[in-house]
Every structure is written in C-alpha cells, then in structure tokens.
Length: 325
Ligand code: GTP
Ligand code: MG
Image (cartoon, rainbow, N blue to C red; front, top):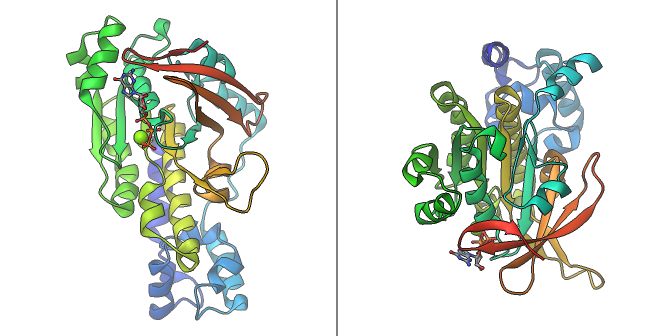
C-alpha cells in the first residue's frame, strides 16, 4: 500500500511537459494518444511516438530516454523477494475440479487470467461463478472476501448469483452484499474504474477483481488501422492498473475477451482473441473456451509460463460451473 502511494506521488511531481523537447503542442498530441504520464512514455518505443505525427524519431528517442530517467522503471527485485511475494499466492476455485487442475489448483492471485471465446461460450457464467466462489471460506476454495466487478456489457445478473449461491448452500443475500458492481459506459470510464478500484479496496477486503469484458469498448470505439496504436496504448495502461491492483491486494484478476475470425487462416482454428500482443503478454493465464454439446464447454489453457498446455471439459448449468464429462 505504502509503496504505491510513493510511486503515485513521484509520478505526480513530474509531468510530461517537464521532458526536454515537449512543449505545449507536443504534450497535447501525446495526451490525445494516451501518453499522459511519465511511465507510459518510459515504456513506449520511438516508433510508436513517431507514428503520432509531428514528432521526429530522433526527438522521440530523447523524450523516451528522459522519461526513463524519471520513471522508476529500473525497479529490481532480488529472486528472494520475488519468491517471498510468490509464497503469498493463493488460488481460487472455478467450481470445476477439472479446470482447477488444468490451472494448477485454481486462479492465481497477483496475475491476470483471461477467458476468451465466442458469444455464448460461457465467459460471463464463469465470472459470476468466480464471484460467488470468492465469498466462500478458504477451505471451500474461496477467499472469504468481497468482489469487484467492472461490467462493460451490462450482463451482471443477481438472479444467477442467487441460483449459484443456493446450490452451494450459501445465503444469497450475504453473497450479493459482498459483490460490488460498477457499470463501465465506455473505455475511458472503464480505465477510470480500474484506477478507482484501489480506493474501494481500502474500505472492503477485495480479493477478486473481474472485468467482463476487457476489450469490447476498446474494440468498438477504436476501429480501423489509424487508431490501433492508441487503443493498444490505453489497453496496456488499463491492464497494468489491474495487475498492480492484483499485486498490491494479493487478488485474483480475471477478465473476458472476445474472439474475431481471421479470414487469412484457412487451416486450424481461425478464431483469435482481441487485443493482440498487449493482452496476450499481460495476461499470465489464457483460457480459450469452445462450445460443445448442450451446456458442455471445452476449456483450453494456452501460453502458460509454467503449466503444460492442455484442455478439459466443463459444464454450464443452472447451478453454475462444474465438471463436464
Ligand atoms: P458473450 O458475452 O455474448 O460473448 O458470451 P459469454 O461467453 O459471456 O456467454 P455466457 O457466459 O453468457 O454463456 C451463455 C451460456 O450459458 C448460454 O448459452 C447457456 O448455455 C448458459 N447459461 C446461462 N444461464 C444459464 C442458466 O441459467 N442455466 C443453464 N443451464 N445454462 C445457462
Ligand atoms: Mg458475456
């Protein structure tokens, strides 16, 4: 907690106008494109900046170099410190033993887990189930904690929470009291809510933060090639806010993502997740959901840093998520 405060204060002291070669006009251009603080500039590439227009590549190199000096990017931790932080990692059950096993015991705190798949593949159902599960005691695979949901598609349904809670023998009213839902009306609102999450965590013990959907606003607001760089920049910032929340609060971050069909892929599965490399690299665990017969869904773990790839079957039902067969 104290550490973020310190970082925030340091970031506030220096604005992008303080960087050499950044006058009023350049600052405005940078801000319009999502480069509104030292940290976003410090991690940008000269090519990204020069694509904005009006900034030569040489100037971009200087701006980034200066931003890197100010920003706390060279933050080294010893292996021992990282191990200590990782010892605190806790796991949240999905409700399906199969899926938990695939994930090495459940969804990890301090990481982002992404569920992607087409409409009706069960992403929202999994989010609702995770919300219920997080409120249950540790011995039942939960955190006995509150939950924060950033709902961008207006698909949160208290009725489903009630059904899933009853099935688990929980008091639905108590569960609903612990789930805090914020509706995000557009991508900027969504980013703001991601930042505000830290405030809510001072009042409530939040060990699960859900974003359903991570990408839909960004996808519909930033269409076409011209706005791609800006979209990726904003998504990157948003995801890092989420990750920071997860690290500071030792919380699970779970997000949903849609897929788009790639007409250039003729062999194999043409469905690819939205958000490109930014989402792909920031999410530690990615699970691809495919429809099967009835309420069955195939969940496939891809790109995990230390777990083997694999897939399993889950079942969507009135009572929630469980093992499929
Ligand atoms: P989009 O948000 O549209 O991309 O889809 P999604 O992946 O979030 O799909 P969602 O989680 O909404 O899954 C919808 C599916 O869940 C439906 O097709 C149903 O099969 C199943 N489902 C939802 N509610 C119930 C329910 O009350 N009972 C049962 N049996 N199945 C349900
Ligand atoms: Mg959904």
